[in-house]
Length: 413
Image (cartoon, rainbow, N blue to C red; front, side, top):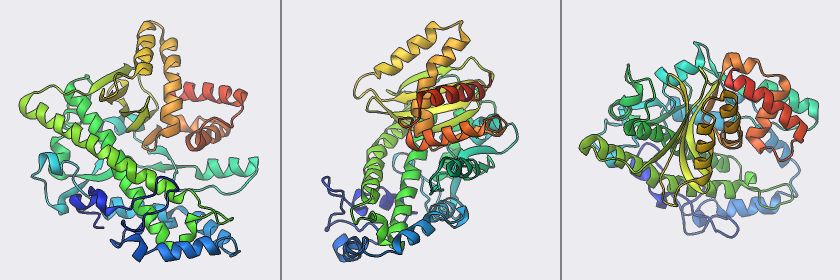
């Protein structure tokens, strides 16, 4: 597959199809290595041999551990991301189909899904920002080992120039389609239709780009070794299931990206109001110490979600009412507004949303460095585990104590 051609990237026939029953690739569809060959004529034989040999080949565990425990810059996931973003190995203009008239591929731009000049600048205080290190697979057991490994390798610093980047717009459309939230003088969030559509486009463009990048990573991983598809017992690992979820999710989101673009075009050209529903929360703070922009699913509805400092801090959630209104968000907004003079009450009522949706699910999330340094090691470990695994295995007392510290520092109060 050519990852620099829009029509190839967004053609479902160019991707593998998996059996809904056991998630195995279907013989007469594209191979998981994305060679362009059918699975039955490409990787199938080697995959079946790996299934047979996995249990009786003792060195495989060590080989896989070596693949996953390399230094960050030698990890296949890191290499895939680096080449995608810096060499533009994955590059396209998301506006190609709806707006057309794109720059040629030499003008595809590294663009920030969190606005660099507004959101990231306001978050960073002139320093680098902190993100989860999702490249690192922390292998090993024991409380002390996990504590040291997570505090040392679970997070990474990044300059705002390189934070929240995709190569998913040409230079022309990157300028034109985000002028209401990125042009000098337009930094304040007003809740206008144009701003909400632009923030929604930021969120979904991140998710789609990173899904394509993760699909590319899995295609490279299966080329490196077929054993990744199986557990030590010879049973299937989650590899094919994860691959299937990524591909299916990509083509569920793609029409929604087109819808945002189409509504943006109609608004700009004919001043036709969009059908995008928006709920925003203005936080009673001078600043919130994290920002994010990506897709969340709430009550089975895709939500375009942003947390920004522009200039004041806001949580912005947008969605299409195909399945009706999102009742839990309406109730949360009502509760938030009822606490109009109660700052503590407003912030407390938002915490289940921030932890339950944002901290657990977000990939495109960044933290203020000074605030992050205030976290105790226990909270850094807790935050990392919540992000990776959720809260189900965390004792209630630990969760309560860590939440208090997280709220205090993320809210900056």
